[in-house]
Structures are given as structure tokens and as C-alpha cells.
Amino acid sequence: MTVRRAAAFFVVLFVALAIPAQAAELKVLSGNGARSAIAELCAEFERVTGHKVTVDFAVNPEVQRRIEGGEQFDVAILNPPVLDALIAQGRIVRGTRSVIGRAGIGVAARAGVPPPDISTVAAFTRTLLNARSVAYPGEGASGKYFVTVVDRLGITSQMAPKMRPMPAEYNVEVVGTGEVELVVVVASRIAGVPGVQLVGLIPQELQTWIGFTGGMSAAVREPDAARALLRFLTSPVAVSALEKAGIQPFKE
Image 1 (cartoon, rainbow, N blue to C red):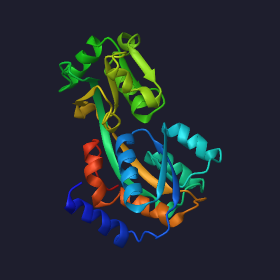
Image 2: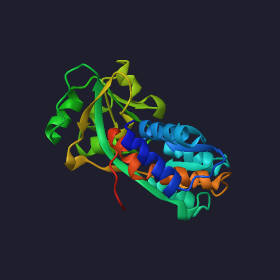
Image 3: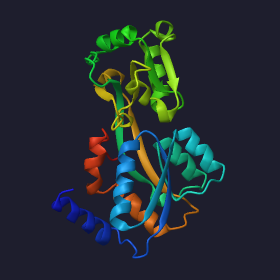
């Protein structure tokens, strides 16, 4: 970290965020889409503030089920529709809803192989049809969207033998190990996975954007620290880590 960036951390964290002197322990439940950026930022927040942050990643529907089942947490980071549903249920404090960013749908291949052409709808279609196998998150928002894209392209029957719905924690990793040739998933999920290269985003005509939002539990144990973490994740200091993972800031 540069001196300038380190100074920015202290200004943002200790002045703007008014972090309390006593260290707290926070439990974060997060969807997998922004995994690498959230892990990095929570670790940095922990390092600078002395607060202990434990992050548990799962697909958004599973996180929602766990919260609705009464699991204790302090901060949740989820796709906007899921977070908003939990706010409506009174499980997340409405006034703490924080927009972190958004990412498009991307394609990844094994590192070191010539990247396939996905520059146009026709090229993307050919790449899918020529692929040996294509992974996607079976329960995730990006995976469900990809299934609709395959249908829009009119290649559902041809792709059926090649489609590999995977669990959230292993849908990109299977490409790095060579078990599957390609993965189509929210691009931010690809960042930081060993042995994998981002080929690029799918063509604009087929693109959608997956949002990431955070909120504080209605049963939060350390409200000051939880609010500080949410402000940190949406502060200018966080932009570099978010952009490195393919997440762009935006306002709803």
C-alpha cells in the first residue's frame, strides 16, 4: 500500500467513519459474486481498525435462507433484490442499505490457453457451441441469467450435454483445474482464482449487470463497527479493490 493510500485509509476510517476505540467482532454473510473484492476489503478493514471480521460466502439464495432461518450476522452483502426482500421482512435495517457496485457477465478460460472469441453475438455463440463443456453457477443470479441467454441464442438443445451447473464455491475453480473448458459467471467472481483467465464480458446485446449491496442486521451486536464497515465498502478507498475485481461503482 502506498503512503498516500495508507493516509486515505486513516482519514476515511478514523475521521469520516468515527470508528470506536474498542475492537469489535463482526460476522459478514455475503454472496459469492464479489468474493475476491469483499475478502480483500474486509481483511484491510480488519488490519487497519483492529476489528475482527469473519466473512462467510454462499450463493445469494442460500444466504437469504440462512438469514430467514434466524442465523446471527452483523452485515450482509447481497444482490439488491435479495437484500431488499430481507429489508422488507425487517431482518436488515432499511436505513443502512449501501450500494457497493455492479459487474457484468463474463467468460473465463484456463490460464495460458488461447482465449476464444466472444467479441460479437455470433462469435460468442460459436465459442459456446465449440466448447467441450461450460460451467455456470447453478443457483446464482448470473447462472440463471446465462441459461436464459442460451435459450435466446436458440442453442439450448445443442448446449444441453455441455452445460455444467456448479456450486457457488467451485464454478470458476473447475476451469482452473481443467475439469471444465469455460465458465460463464459474473465477472467479479473470476478475479483472483488461480489458473483462470478472464476472456472478457459477453457481448453488450446479451449483457446484464449484477448489483452488490450491503446492509446491517436488525439484530446487530456491534452497530457502530457494522456501520463503519458498510461505509468503508462504499468509500473512495474501496474503489481500487472493487475495480480490480471487475466491479464498477454506480448509483441507483
